[in-house]
Image: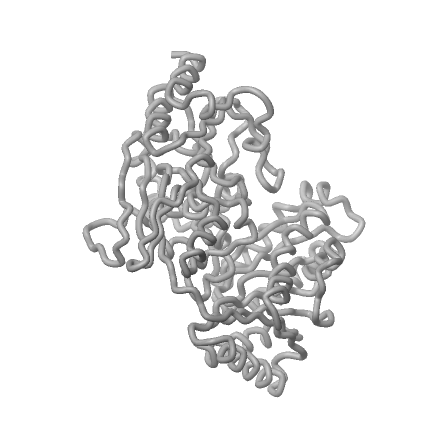
Length: 469
């Protein structure tokens, strides 16, 4: 049957509002980093799970590759169609409802297209916290968060998306609906199918809804910035914070001087309360007792760190507005990088103890190989996840620098990551960008098992083809 027949069959299922064939589709076809630009056969926008199942069945009957997409905020090209014009893009944007909130069970069930911030707000309105927090939370969707196993700024206390999910509803590659929306914390009845699909980037099936954990909203959240001369000092501060605040430490972010220089250059309206320092740490404490109790803990920690010479200076937010500004500094780094020009991005995970040694060795290797290169190093030090990015030297065209040197830079960084016992992808996933690295660096036995799972669950190879494997 022809593509024309396929599109007519889709239209019969989805109607005018659910199928985009003409006009400017670039919002769906261009990735957030503007690195991958594809061309979709059409954009399917189902309104419910039954329509998702019908679309996937039609793709199987007509042998059409399917590319699922949430908020299109991914950084590895995982939800961008290729340039063939033969792949159907499946947008979950119309499936954006909060289905239920179970206060006694501390769970919330939402459609996959629910925007993360809308989910956070729905929980907050009922006095609860949904702790997954990303810079893109105003746009990204929970289905995409789960498909890529997103991390964010509060993994240190609450875990990543996988650890926040109790159940899934999804459509398999055969167009069958699995309703696994259990709110159970304990269910030991065979293989853990939920975790198989979380982090699979749409290559095994399409997540259509999720049941997620909620937490009581903290009575207080305190935020502070601290200046450190070295990464070793930042790790000492982390140890002191964990010892004095226990599970209350919900955020521990690190930013090198150049990353904040870029923020100051491109967002001068954001006040930076501390003088320039080699490293600046952003700490957040969530407390179940009171603001006074949290403030006392924080002040005691910072005073002890100053007396011990672990930090040089500190500033504690005195209002919600000041706290938001501190977080804006951290969250504006990717935007400032983008304005400065294209850069080589690395989303890496390391044992926390290995980070100072990795940074020292890799900084030196990159400066030796590419004199003048500018290093944008920031991220979630508390859970060992760095965004270790490489900007072209001052005055060198960024696009030209990337086209000439990106493979060599990646090799230096990823070899060092492996040497220090880390992973070349912490929270962004594989997508199109890192397929070759996965093939080269993943354990061969693990790759064999992954390919066997893919073949068993998607024998026609139509689910997000060309991504991950």
